[in-house]
Length: 218
Image (tube, rainbow, N blue to C red; front, side, top):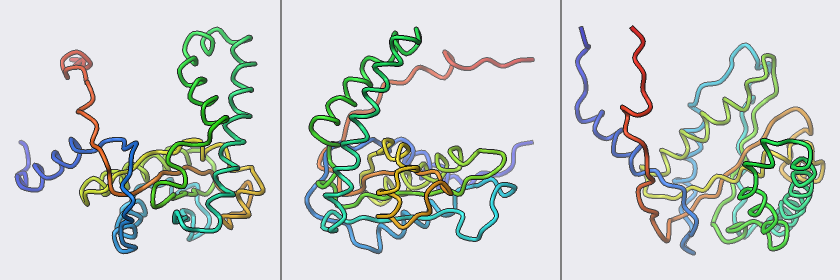
């Protein structure tokens, strides 16, 4: 027997999930510190691998406002990392058929970031880095995904926009970057996002019907 459902709560969750978008253009106005903290709190509530952690601060948030003196330096690090990664991927395409067939569009984006910098870095009001302690079993990237999804949904509920900045994942062994954000090099994995008021709202992304992608095994 199905348990009773809180209809209002269920509808609100559906609306938030359906309203979530990846924002590519932000307004100049910066959200308040209180709104950003609500988003971080949502991320803090995300699940984690309790068997893997050995410290109370296993998950950390580093907030870099657009006006921070660290922003130009971080933008330069990200630009350099994109350039290095694009060259590595080009070499990989010569040896790996799957990469050769599927990595083309991503490689083009990496090349553009390596030449011109990461879009919206220094334009969005906030760059947030999330750090998750490495552990055994190595599921910290899954924990980061849960964390960022919570943050993304909370941002949508608050009328804010969020853009994932997955290039951040490449910086957990970059000493200059780790020193800047005050994270011990090699002890955490990283991911990040940009947050601000959206200056545009993309259309609803195309999805297959549920029937097309679901199989019930009796």
